[in-house]
Length: 327
Image 1 (cartoon, one colour):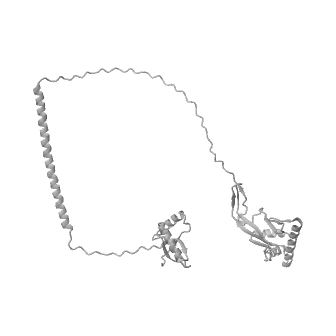
Image 2 (cartoon, helix red, strand yellow):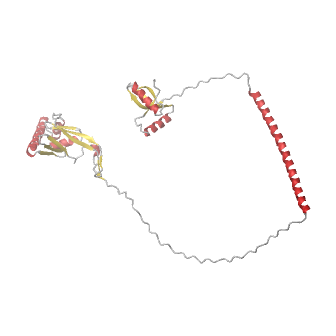
Image 3 (cartoon, one colour):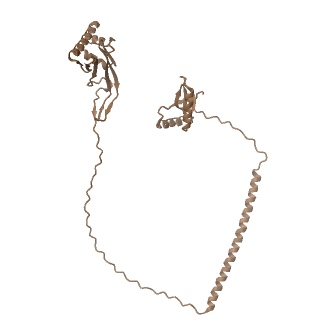
C-alpha cells in the first residue's frame, strides 16, 4: 500500500500530517528567494520539517487511507502500523530510508532520527506551475565606439583677384586768413556780452515764476489738508459692533499613535511639537487608548494631503481619524 503517496497528498491541503507511531510532518510557508551567487530566483513554497515527538494518531492519515482504499478504519490503522515497521526495519538495516517525494531519514552515531526534506515537489498550491528561474548578469561595461573620420577633402578656391582701387583725389581745405581790422573783433565781443546778459535775465525771470508756482501749490495743499481734517473729525463716533465668529471645527485628525498610558501619550505630543508639528491628544478610543495626532484639519482634502506627505516622510503608521472627540 502506498502510504507515502497518501502522506504527500495530504501535505498539499494540511500543514501537519501525523504518521502514527513515528512522527509528524510539518509544513510552513517560505517566500520566494533570490540567490545572488547563482543568479537564481526560486518561487514560494512549503518548507517541510519533521517532529518525532508528535506520534499520537489524530485520525487524518488513517481516515484518508480508509476512504481511498475503501477499507474499514481498523484495517487502515493496521496498514499504517505495517508501514512504520517497514521504515524502522530499513533504518536498522541500511541506516537510511527515503519516503518518496517527502524526504530522507537517517540515524546519527547517537541513534537519533535525522530528516532531510526533498525539494522536488512544491506543496504550496498557489505556486503550482512555477519553477526556478535563472537570470544572467548584464555586462554594463561601456563600449567605446570609434567613428571613422573621413579625410578632409581638398577644396580648391579660385585665386583672389586684386581689385584695382582708384585713387581718390584729396580736396585741399582753404582757411581764410584772419582779418587785420581790429574793430570787427571788438564788435563780436560786444555782441556776445549782450547775448549773455539777455540769457541771464531770462533765466532769472523763469526762476521767479517757478518759485511763485511752488508757493501757490504749498498753500493749496495746506488748505486741502485743513478741509480734510475738518471733514473727518467726528466728535461723536458711532458705537462699535462686536461680531461673534463661529470657531472652526476640525473634525479630521492625522493620528500618530495610540497609547495605553497617558504619560506616554504626553511624551509623544512633546516629541512631535519639538519637531514642528501641531500635535495634541485628541481623545480616548473605545479600547481605552489615548490618541495622539500630528495635526487636525477642518477640510478633508487638506487632511488627506497632509497624511500622504507624512507617509512619504517615513510615518507609514499614520492614519486618518474623522470626527470630534472629547479630550
